[in-house]
Image 1 (tube, rainbow, N blue to C red):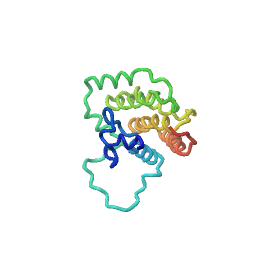
Image 2: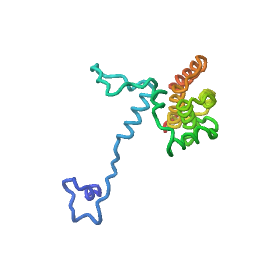
Image 3: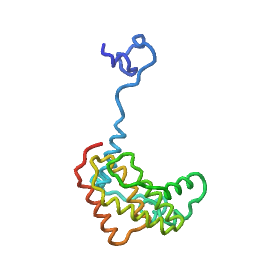
Image 4: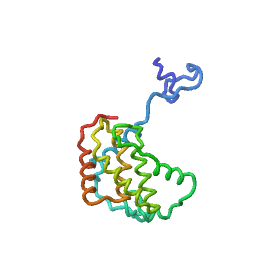
Length: 189
């Protein structure tokens, strides 16, 4: 009898007396995380989020934010105290390093987002300028090789740009850079 039958309790020929010790987990892994990642990447690239049938839109449960993810009005309602705020401010006011879309462990992107959040919440013009500079620095990045690192790092820059706003020239350059990423030849994860 194949070993898989001995250790799978739902198999009709599995016999409890053949097992020694606790049942082993099956080798089959869920495909949901992979499917979710493929769908998310497809949405990022704008190819998998097209509706397959026309259905009436669902009624919104809450008003949409003014921005992509949040808005200055929403941020103004958040607290400016506590350990999370302190950590956010420390990150925003600390060194950010340089952008690196090829490094899975890079923190420039999240530091830039921290800068945007703190700048918008506090009205700190100097921090907003530092954030804009960091966003534009990523447009000069030419090092990327895998989709995982690039897609993991780029989101924070997009949200930060939406929060602090860019001049029309910088906005056009940033949008062009983001748009061009859709067609870059990248390896898998």
